Length: 178
Image (tube, rainbow, N blue to C red; front, side, top):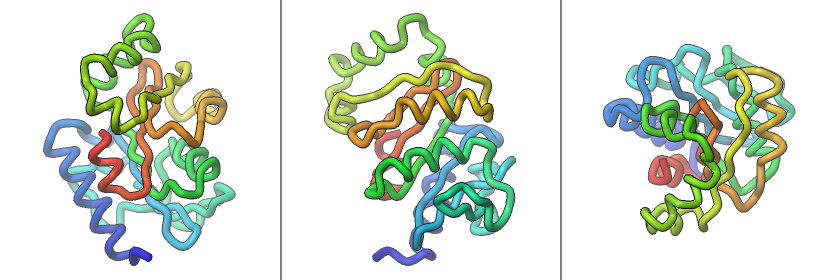
């Protein structure tokens, strides 16, 4: 079993690399990992470029906040973990490219078209990316829309007009998928 310190290191490295690559800016992303049945999620307002161990809130698997102030979109992470216990890390980004892509008309069709252009993406996702209908970020409607799309066989979700959510067995696996 991977120790908590190692999971923090993976999360902090991933966050800083995403920030340095311009895939998140300011406080426009959130990430989480599971340890001993609890979700460690970046706190509201966290900047991936300055994230450290003190930047995480702790939430139990029922959604009760145990420590800190989690990102307002932590229910998205929780829905994935509750649906598939093999998932141990989630990253949500609002990168310029993923956000622009999520705003395209017929994004579902265009998402399927990506696989013919990017075979690596098809390999990493098994050809499964789901699109989630738009609702205001942080809203109950968004969380309901997301819960209705969560699927054990899906590791990547496009939130229409919003961004990308990816999940995996480790933070490094999710980083690679992003």
